[in-house]
Length: 404
Image 1: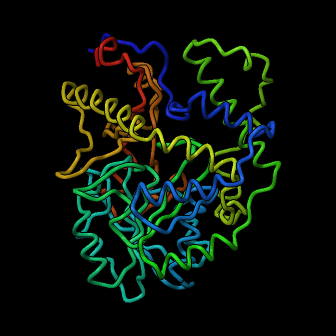
Image 2: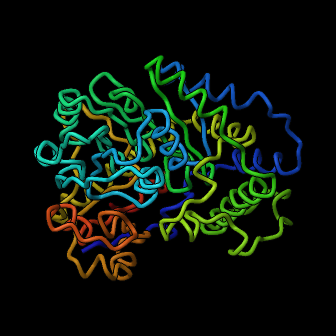
């Protein structure tokens, strides 16, 4: 029996937002910063950090993946292999281009694509394979999947949305394949509410990436202001949740109604309809916030990994089945995934109360959140019914005081 409680209910979203990011966002709203060089500075920083000379930033992980489809020259009727445990935003980036998705079953050790299932799924029309690092875990079959892709001439797209800063053996995640994308959405390792970027080391793809980025448009000023205000409001809400007093300059900031916040997904997206956000590149003010956070990535990683270590100890003591880190992997542990009974996943409120944290339900279907039955992907269906995830951004005193 657990006899501990956190000092507040641990959230899944926005937990790592800092006052520095919120202040920069507020300065951008008030036009107190001159940020024109910020996009170039961000691209140079990413290029150096990931040792990948070709970088472009967009207004989301989904927009980044949408750009990758164009960079690779995928055409309507081509096929791509996706893990049968992913989100609709990933699928949309392909389906909006007329790409046919082949869902491939996963394994339940790291919730990544199963290489044996992928081999059976390859067809002559397959052009790419998505290597998705779910929850920030390095896929069990990473080596086998990369070898399979090379054998069949498939482009390897690394989905690092959950895995910013992770590594495998001597390589940073994002540098194992042909091209990779990352996300700075509010549920990710870094948080600009929406945002993302693409990297590649391939000069041919790099040239195409620069052209796609140059042709992309920025969101209008009203959207950017709404996003910046959303970030500021989320930081204020986080301080209130933790019972921490606001600095004097923040106390009179008017709250924005929920309807005015930028949502995680647009209603049209959830219906499978194209929205302009998939073609937006990142404006300078968002690039400045992202750069600031990436410069703190080692600290963010350390905190996430410490949180995962706490949950690992709890899971071992409680007999709970959980994801594992494969040999040579340095996971980011954006979330700590565990397997529970189906009723707990359907109704996690009691479990949430017991643990003192929000319970994540990624993913409720093989293409979350859209209903999808894939009888040929039994592990994907099982994970959809049984996998929940726990927040890893825990109070710094958790190890000493929470008894996890």
